[in-house]
Length: 418
Image 1 (tube, rainbow, N blue to C red):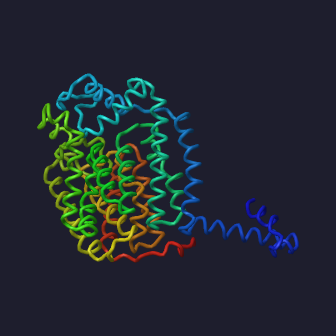
Image 2: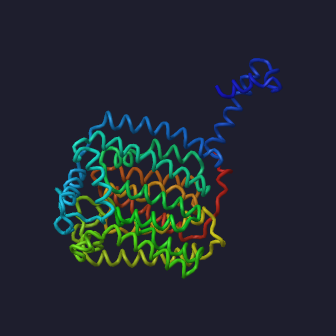
Image 3: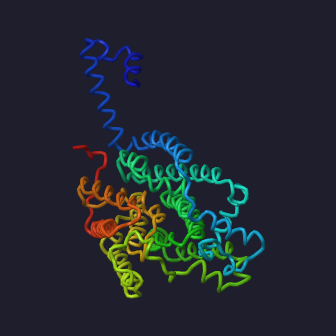
């Protein structure tokens, strides 16, 4: 329709002087060319993003209004922050229906605010719409980041919008804290791509204060700061991050410092086998074994060293926005791949990073799309099965190996559909 209006308004266009049949063919060809550019050329990513954002608004509204809300952790979150609002600052005494509070102080402040806004957590529908807005903010940040980094062709945004029921549900139907942490993290990534290091580090520390999984990005961030800012300034930025953590945790540190540190930054916490998404194919006693945990930690360290030696160290200086993004996302990816257990809400930890990471490797485009599809299918299999968890881990292995191999920098403007 836009093409037709354009041609009618432009009296100098040669198509106006064609016969009706030829003009129809020419308009169809022009429309196909425009659609190809919209799907494959990076300069159209923002246009595609706006269209998908409109669709996302409708999709989230329909999900909230038509799909039944599922209570998992929201009531527990409200019970935990209610204890704080009632004056309890001993972290070991803050508990909810699912157990003790195990998140840092930033979580308490954010969900205390939601506690007040939603009438002590009782107005679930309002909370859902707030998380729906949070989803749109997350989507917008991802689009801006991908456009800045020239990381993927625009059609990937259609994958984000229409392929994942799981991620939509994590925001609008489950109300987990993981999406909150990731939105703040993506804001920090945006600052890093802008090379606003101080803002980025402060925002990164705020994300860590919501949930500890954000620390999986830390090795990549440390490398970036060393390369771009040098050792002295890197120490300064790390100190600033530490000051943020101290300031947020001060009420709890003054009351019971060891209790706060143990509960909010517990790296040895044990997970239940019944909820695992990535290791269902193992016997339960192996899943709970300390040998497996230590082995995964060693593999994680080995992969980080491999990324540094084979990928990060060879990047041209100064780092481009694309290089900055890949370093951060690859650091997080190998951490997720080596996690002792992944629960369904953890999918949001790396969901939006999978396409830019896989498109940065030498994997053929059909293989990239196959991996994205299989990973999505595995995360949408509930409960997890031996096959789904094994397939997910196999995809992680393929992705990790591809990230270690020499990349073939893709000109995404030239990616064409077969």
